[in-house]
Image (cartoon, rainbow, N blue to C red; front, side):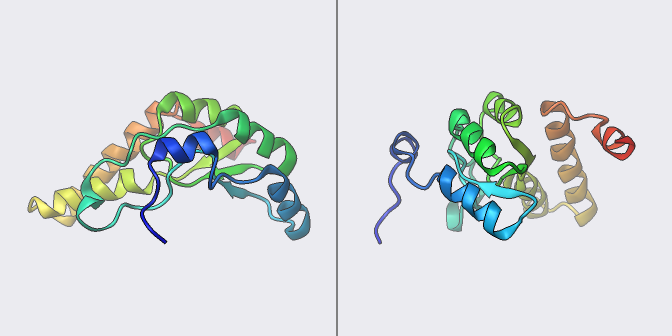
Length: 150
């Protein structure tokens, strides 16, 4: 299989991106309520020695996501949200992304705290700080009460 091509090569070619026609057909045939898509994001934790390093800086092809959203007609999920430029994430939300997974951003502070000799409780505090930063960055402070009321 060989090494994975550089991110820029994959992004510019669209290789590995969700095909909008396939997305629409999948939603129609399965009746799913949400659809996880690829459009520049890098899904999955980096393994081995590099798992504690920052993920490569990624961006999203927002126009591609908009076309998928239009074709699929369901809320889109973005796995691999850690490391994506904030402006791209916010623009993607305006174009169909309704859920963003940022597991690496949560896992890394937890593991780093434990490796540094911190307790599980201290590691949980580190996670809470990371989550609070994302809530602030994404501008979703107070959104739980809005959802509960709606």
